[in-house]
Amino acid sequence: MIYLDNASTTPLDADVLEAMLPYLKENFANPSSQHAAGRRAADGVVSARDTIARFIGCKPGEAFFVSGGTEAGNWALKGACAAGGDRGKRIVVSAIEHPALIESAKDMQKFGFEVVFVNPDGEGIIRPEAVEKALTADTVFCAVMAANNETGVIQPVREIGALCRERGVFYYCDCVQTAGVMPLPVGDCDALGISSHKFYGPKGFGVLYIRNGARIDRFISGGRQERGLRGGTTNAAAAVGCAVALEKAVNFMTENNEKISALRDLFTEKVICGIDGAHINGSVKYRLPANANISFDGCDGEQILISLDLNGVAVSTGSACSAGAVSPSHVLTAMGLPAGRVKSAVRFTFGKYNTVEDVEKTVEILKSAVKKIRAVKR
Image (cartoon, rainbow, N blue to C red; front, side, top):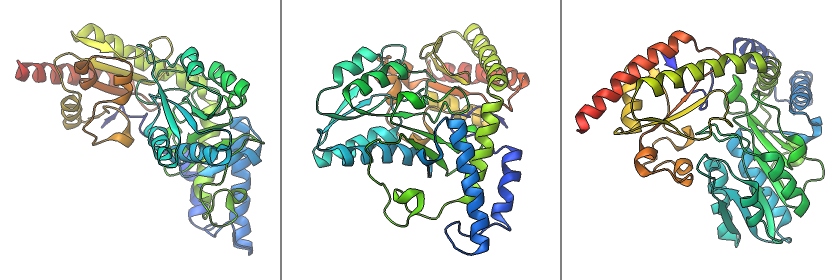
């Protein structure tokens, strides 16, 4: 299989698995237990939190363990609205956010909150001036992601963070696609979320950074885990795995980015030059190194995906969390792209295990798939 869906998830790094195994076997006890076995597991959790905080760029007490990016976004939005509801009931969210933020914002409408969605420009960038226009005196929460999961377009989070800080608005930055790829904007936001499985760590584990002093309520009631803000037994093995994965991703960031972007650029060049009617979606200049979101005139993205899958190539037509949805991409639609271009879009995302041979084989399979689909539609 040629795997080109790394924005959805990445394979578990061998070093990460090795670090996790002791906490799945001999150090399996509940980290909250008071006996020696529990303390051994707890030691692993403490060490993992220290490492994760160091590579996020925050204090250990500001790093809260969650189940992933979806929970991080839900907690940030709902927790901030619950804690800051006396300020007002206006929520500002970019129209290209992950469904975790968009659906969470819609949930809050049932509690009297007004939700304003800010559209991107034609390149998929949320302009600071558009956010500034949406921020009012009664705005309690704002969310604009660091980079979009469908297009890979990088957002001007520093400028947006400054606007929110000046107005006292809680700013959450979804960094699920950028952890281990670019520095995290800790100083520019009140909270940010990352997900371990996006940087070769275990699935079902993530981290929510919450700035000391930020107003936010707890999300899961229960025990005293995560300083009483998020109850539930801590997954020690996943915490250890996340720490190793994040450390390795950051330490090899430059090397990995150079390799991955070279493969992506080679792929897009061959596709654009070799297939008529192929169009790159989103900014080419402000884009993550792994992502190539491309539309193909006269095709259906789902048909291309199926054809590639039958030939051993794994790709995506958008967010994995939206798989199976019949509606067109909300991201590409918000960018104002024509319906045909939205419907024909395919996302190719490269990772550190991909090769030039993967690129060459995929391009040939893709050419054949597009040709056959267009022939049938004529």
